[in-house]
Image 1: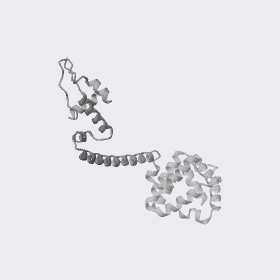
Image 2: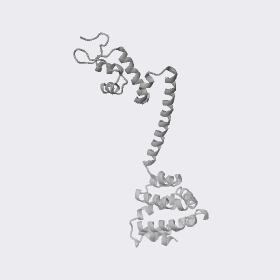
Image 3: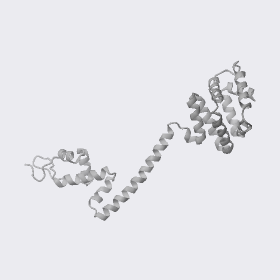
Image 4: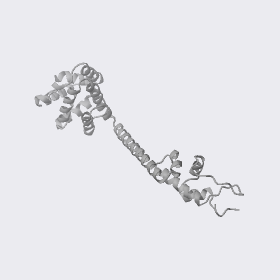
Length: 243
């Protein structure tokens, strides 16, 4: 026979409070919700006090209160309850900031460039992509900056400033695309001298301060030169002819 004071099955109790039966059982196991005795049919029957307690538990859990803290809060005096909620809120604010930082980091990982190079270099690489330069060439360019920045930061900063100015010039953008297309040319390709001459004429038209005199030198620059020459013998020949 069902106790009139405890008419609810576990399923009806869970539905009333807006939780799952599994959650009710978890709250039993954690000592948050007392388990009523079983009736003659072997079923546990719940009353109004269980429903009220379960709603309180659900509300605190949905607010982000850890289950380990809920039991103490349910039994706390008003002042202690308020203090505990403020402490939990501060912890949630810290956690929210950590999540925001993590999301910013994930957003940066989508391109990857800004993790390894300065903001100016990353902007320049983005411009290269926008005009249609291949990922292969952009990646090579990025790797060269990674080598140059740590050992010659001032010179690298000056050089990237020149590059950001240059890429506003339609002829420079056309040269970038031409170099990208020339990557796989053999070093004796008959088109190379014309591209080298075009490069030389473009630099000759630039003010002195934008010429490649600010290019970083030293071991890093030497390594960058070797890397470029190895990646594209055609580029190495263009560079030789352009000097």
